[in-house]
Length: 112
Image (cartoon, rainbow, N blue to C red; front, side, top):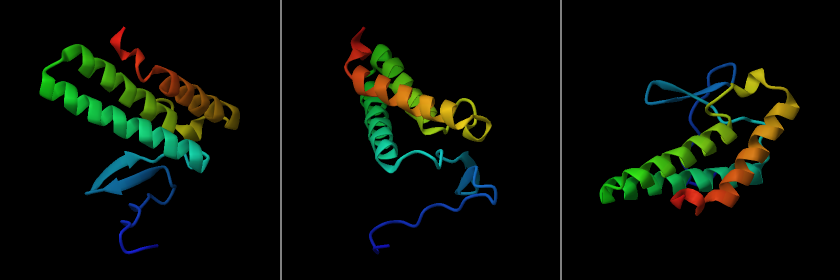
């Protein structure tokens, strides 16, 4: 690991949660292929930036759309929705494939 990359946050012993500043957050599904996880994180960060831009612009519709994209990315990552450890391998794969397809196709569909 290079000195510029932060160490990953510690996980709970069962691997289901990460601990950040004393708070427990659901961990990303460890079965996500690395390229899929990278793409989903890219969508998540873009959606979070869009939330900030919408808040600064005081645009409620854009904020709702951006927050919906954040939710979609978090669900696809396994960080929200049905816990990934309660899903079958097929359900997990379907979750991330569907989420990624929606995010890839819908980035500009927020202006509905």
